Amino acid sequence: MKKLSFTVLALAVILTGLPFLTGDLEKKDLNDETRKELGKDYIRLGDGVVHYEISGPEEGDVVVLIHGNAAPLFSWDNNTIPLREAGFRILRYDLYGFGYSDRPTVTYSRELYERQLLELLEQLNIDGPVNLVGTSQGGSIAVHFTAMHPEKVKKLAILSPFINVLPMKTMIAIARTPGVGEYLSHVLLDRININYPNKVFEDEGSLPDEYTRMYMKQLTYRGFKRARLSNLRSDAFADFTQQYETVEKTNIPVLLNWGSADQVIMADSIENIKNAIPSIKYNEVEGGGHLVHYENSGQVNDVLVRFLTE
Image (cartoon, rainbow, N blue to C red):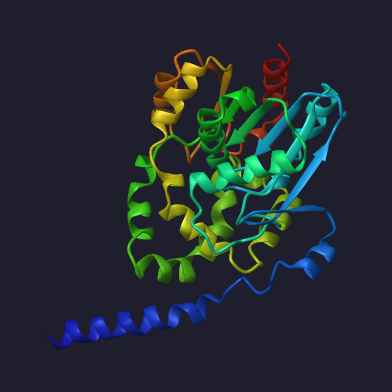
């Protein structure tokens, strides 16, 4: 009994002290002054300020690039030039909670991300249907947006996309436990975020220093962990099968791209997507990791440009 009491006491001491031992990366605020120092382009939408970039010929068909959890807007750096050279006008932006966009105190649901894209297109006076390209969670956001607004989408390309919560069921359950989720996100999420790039690259040794620097910088702004926890607890990490099936009924052309060495989205998820959209065009990058469009950009760019131009 004494041994058990000592163990419980020791565990309590460790859990209490962990926040002080691990520290906190979030030491800066995102505000007008901060953004003035950062430069770049920003726009104020209903839920907050959004960092975006638009480039390419003004008369070109618009391609909207939606990033995932592995990195914000800059994760498309290796894809924008080939798309511009193919004649497309490129819009990429940071989702709420990521990069240099605001971290509003809201529920980070699929509806929030849908509203963010709707308002962004409206504020930038982009009226016609656009080509949507989304990776990882950005893929599920693009699928949901297409299912809800098929008249606004010309073509849809999804790279290593998310379809349901099954592969992350345990992690989601822990995150959704009141109190436990808050504590663990405060204590562990910085460490998880720091190590995440190693999981999304096929070759850990190929992580560019510039990628690591830009990825780490977003973690230093207050609200990142809070936004990630809200995201994990919301329907943004629920089952999107119905949305995929709805997209199939729209007859909008869809491309699915996946790397066979992906450690985040497994092969069974890819099969579920194929079953939900039987007409989908599929491209597999042998040995590609989760961030295949960044790490194997040459192969992905060729397939993406061909799909969008054909």
